[in-house]
Length: 275
Image (cartoon, rainbow, N blue to C red; front, side, top):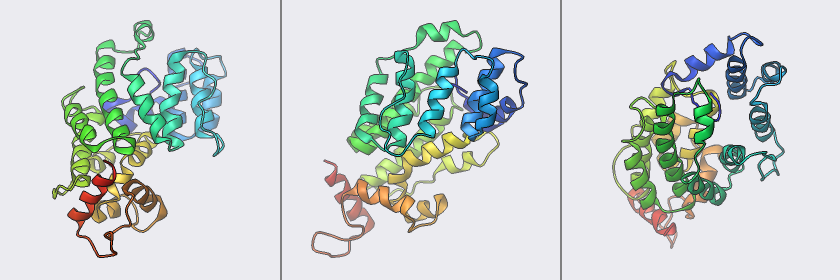
C-alpha cells in the first residue's frame, strides 16, 4: 500500500478497493489511493490524491520520479530522511539493474528499522509489519545474492524465508519457487513448478507493479528453463534471453570447445562461473 504497510494476502483486490476510495475525506484514504495509483501507473489519480497536501506526498512523488525517470538515472531522488532513502533505493537499483548496489542496499536493510514511523501509524498493524520485515529482508537479500553474490547463500536465505512472516504473505509463497530455481541453477535436476504464476492469476495476486518486479528478480533464473520461459513470455525474446545470458557468463548450450552441453552440465558451469 505504501512504504510502511503492504497489500499482503489481499493483493490486487485491496488495491482496487483503494482506487475506489473518495478523495479528500481522510488523509489515510488519500495515501492508499495514491499508492494504488502508482502501482497501476495512473498519474492523474496520483495528482488528485496528493493535491490536499498528503503527509506522505514526498514518498509518492519520489516513487513517481523513479518510475518515470530518464534511462541514465542511477541515483535515488533527493530524500529528506533516511527512511525515504532506503525506500527509494531498492526500487531505483532494481529498475536500473544495478545488481551490486541492490545487494548493498539489501544488506543495509538488515540494520534499518522504521520503528517510530510504524508506532505513529494507527492504520498499520505493528505485529504484522515486523513479521513482514523479517521475511522481506531475507527474500530481498536472497534475490540480491542471485544477481550479484553466491547461489549457495541465496539458497540458504530462501529456505529460511519460507518459514518467516504470515503463511499467506506473497513473499513467503514465492520463497519455495526461488529455492527451486536456485537449485536448478546450481545443477539440480528438479523441475520447478512456479507456484507464483498460479497465485498471480488469482484476484488476490500481486499488484501490477509488484508482479513485474518479481518477474524481473526471477528472470535470470527462469530463463535457464525453457518450459518456464514459455510460461512467463515467448522464448527467444531479448527480455528473457539477455539477462540469462549475462548472468550465466557462458554461451548458451556450448562448452569451452564449442561442444553441446546437457542442461545439468550447463547449469553446473554457470554456477562455476559465479564462484
